[in-house]
Length: 169
View 1 (cartoon, one colour):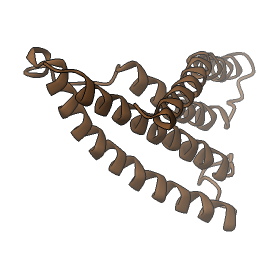
View 2: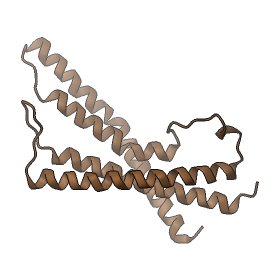
View 3: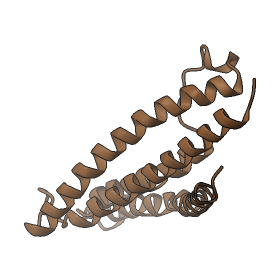
């Protein structure tokens, strides 16, 4: 593997591992928000209007920023009907093809996310709810998570190409 590709894989994998570990614990933030919602409804008899949307925003961050970590660990869903019987090299060929589709998909998603985020900033977009939070922060987090998944997908493609070139089955 080329030195620049090896460095890219090392840096991206390390950063996404770090972000994934942080996002694992952000689940407690969402639990705390929903717990506050329950407590405020029961004890104070006044519902907090911000809790549902804030929990949704926390879930978006948890899901999208943690997505690269999931790709890195290989914990994505895969149909194992034929895949499990294939050789390492054949799996790498198949994975490199599917990862190209994922890279295309994430590229389209990132393009749309950046466009949506710039719209939200330009027009001061707010959610159509009673709380009316600004939308650009959650859209920026969404773009960040998609960007991390795109970087991780490229890292996985480099790893698959290395397997194809080096493993002789």
